[in-house]
Image (cartoon, rainbow, N blue to C red; front, side, top):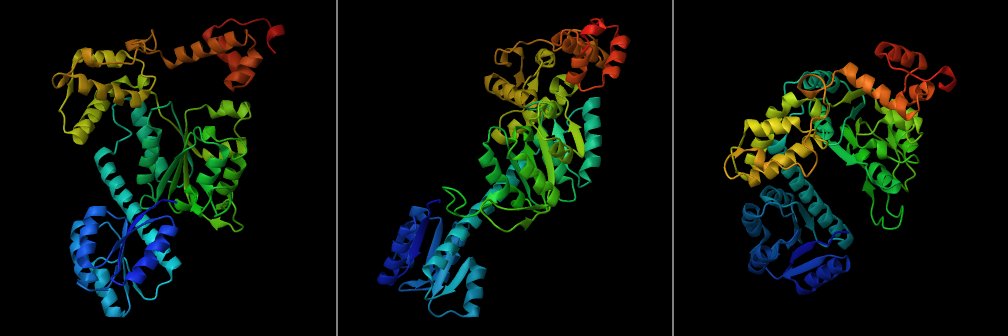
Length: 456
């Protein structure tokens, strides 16, 4: 449980001592104050998380302090206690900024719950405002560029966003799967509802389960209070599971059950809760290979990929490099005030020749370093640092160093055949195609193979 600082302004010494003692025993820090003047001083000096304020004080009343505080520190929640409450007084206090108006005597446990809830609500509101502000500064269009691949991606995503079906986004690390997932939500019928995400990579089965489904108090050691899970919080909105391929087998049937039955049960709970969410998943893994390896359930796979979107890697869309680079440089300018920056022709040639294993995420890091190293406002080859990875074209054939799809397919078939020592049957299984289809491809590309005795 988090430890909060609570300013207690009460001119009755015994009552002040009782409240402060109870708050301290509950794990919080209580800051006692005798009246308006003392309370105003401690408010500015101690920066409390919340204020418990008696209405009538020897040197003023709570409304005097509220008027001052809500202009200077409007985010701090205030609860007012009074021995002579009235509806008119309560309405006036709330209008001035009080979060609660309670008549004495107040039950201490209930009072504590109100204080903690008020602090959490204020924190969540700040996070929400900060997140909205951050999004307004850094929202990225997932379709920046002019390449055919990115235009096709935009057309497909636009149609999919309007539906309510599950989506599986595939792509290499750093291609912007999370950005695309957020765009789909923001352009869907659920846009005004919550969007929550969880990166499943590297999380233990128990942690994934508690994060997705939530838990009740006492469900396991350390569960000192109940916590709703991601699916529950995303009710009516969108849940985005990044790296879904990393979810362990024991958790997968539980996830499938929630998705199919549209209800969940918190860990340690006996009742189920109805949920209505849209699921968007993402992975850099080949889930079809995971099906063959039996590390990912086929029923879950078919449940999450009503639609599948594949984001092309950056090395396959080098035409988009100038537009992507300028967007990133402009975002740096908004955040730091530096710039504007330009990229020299030589630097752009080097960037378009590099194979970008980290995709857009790596491009962002390279450009950010370059803006720091640049002596002027033009980034040249000298400022580009690729972290000692080879600056080479990913392919040596075809126009502008890119192989055609036929050349890529032939190369891949030859590689798999070599790995299987020429055995067509095993190669077909590895490629996920019928043996007859692979024979057709071998004939089409004129690829030699071992005799039929070895083709098993």
